[in-house]
Image (cartoon, rainbow, N blue to C red; front, top):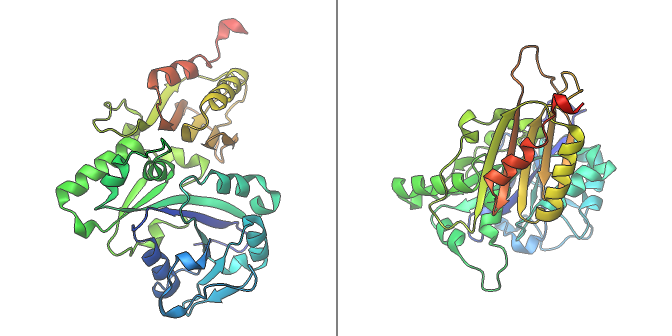
Amino acid sequence: MTESADKLTPITVITGFLGAGKTTFVNYILKEQRDWKICVLENEFGEVSIDDGLVAESLDAPEDLITMDNGCVCCSVRGDLVRTLGQLVQRRKEFDAILLETTGLADPAPIVYTIQTNSKMSENYFIDSIVALADAKHLPLHLDEKKPDGSANEALQQVAFADKILLNKIDLVTPEQKTALKDRLALINKFATVIETERSRAPLDKILGLNSFNMESILNYEPDFFEIQEEAKHNLDLVSSVGITFQGQLHAQWFNMFMMDLLRERAADIYRSKGLLTFHGQGNTKFVFQGVHEQINFGPAKEPWKDGEERINKFVFIGKNLNREELTKGLMECLYKEEEK
């Protein structure tokens, strides 16, 4: 929950597979839970069936809010996300969080870009996390699906983009099936937290207000994330996560050129990227970056390198057809060399 009135309001972006239980999850937030006051932004009310007719099929204006008896509200996003969030600015401190449900949208990049680059948005809101709701029973079928027109597999994309995965309907699968599925999810996106649920009843304190999208969340990765993983045994449409670590100080210009070239050539394939870096000539300043496709948010970390702390550069890439050796080689070539002063 928000800590004080002067804090930015967190936005959690919700994606979900067809039949995963997203409607039940939204209903639970709007009607049954009592601990959080949340504003749920819906693309189209017609696609979400709120029980007992509490939410109308249409509203006269996008700023209209329907208030539930638990203090939560529901609002329609009609065409312009900036306009809708702008109209909520005066009321945003009433809410612990805003949940933006993106019906049918696998790629959250436009939303992230809008929040981070529009000054009115970034002065009032921040992306807290990207959450994918998944059906434990049917997810393997979705992951294996081959699109006839060669388009992207949305199930794979949603898993790859997520900071958190709500693995719903676990009561419908065996323990062995659940374990196999979680292992498979880790091959696609190991840094996403998987939260098991039944009937979409998720503990909101494990989803909201944790700032898991934050650039500095890379500091919380388990050490073994960066160990070289075995090649995927499944056909994952070559979607995978790659973690890279090495010591040394980076040359700022060379690193910038490397990232510019990489994203110019591979932005569509690189869904998420994160980094923790140290640059030559920057003293104890620790740098972090967070990327969604070609959109990169880069800057100094809140805390500097401590005296005596081992300065290890850490990188995470999640996407299609990633080559660990090529990425490692490119990054290592960005290291500053004393003899080239």
